[in-house]
Length: 113
Figure 1 (cartoon, rainbow, N blue to C red):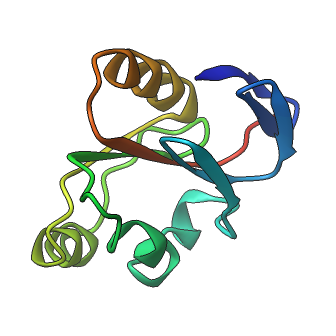
Figure 2 (figure 1 turned 90 degrees about the vertical axis):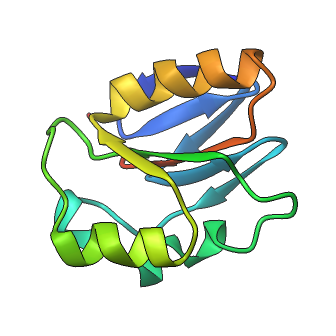
């Protein structure tokens, strides 16, 4: 579960991680994206080959609610990834709800202050 976000990082499963992260059921990885413009297909490759495959990728875009480019949406679709873009706080809350429901969910979260 994601217990807290802000101050440049996240508290997940009782462990504080600074910076942006990729969150999977059972593990957290550092993610190089620091702002919405850094979100690319290449930066999200870590979620493409999960086994079992994730049902939904929540992409927390920091404090903004941007519209991803058509090329990014198409690339995710072609990779078989269903993604939902939202601000990082909403992505944290939604991740927790879906995880509690037993869904195969992952989150790519940009850290906020």
